[in-house]
Length: 226
Image (cartoon, rainbow, N blue to C red):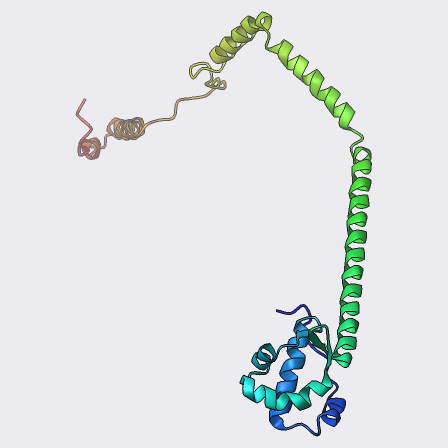
């Protein structure tokens, strides 16, 4: 793709300047102008090459070029076009100006970024006022831990571990029973207690002369006669 993606065309001037040309000549003229724009403003003054640019046969080109070449300047084996050359220089100037502005903007951005990074680097220690104290604490803690687990203290530490293990073993870990505590009765104990109450009741009835006393309790499977 050309570095100049569009070519300025002054329609009124173009139409006014080409009134004497045929439709075929106008088409060939436009093709020559566009090729010259992409080529940087000059084309070789060679009939065979110009005929290919205009997409005409060499014979047809030579018949039409008499009128077409009056719009061009022929010099040094090349042809040029005054109006096209001026527009080309104008477009090149704008392109260079935009490129220079972009370079300046990029340089300014890079400088600003560098200055910002330098400012942040310089400000970093002020955001960490505790760094020295933290380092000292860490060093002291390391020395304390090293002393706590030194060979001299290892034996005492092992002894304390064994004592703690005995203190909190399953046998010694059971809580003491409070005073007056009684073992909860099982189902068997509860049944025996009920049976004993029935027997006592029957004994009272027998003592009172009740002949039917003692019969109800003997109906229970777990109860045998005394």
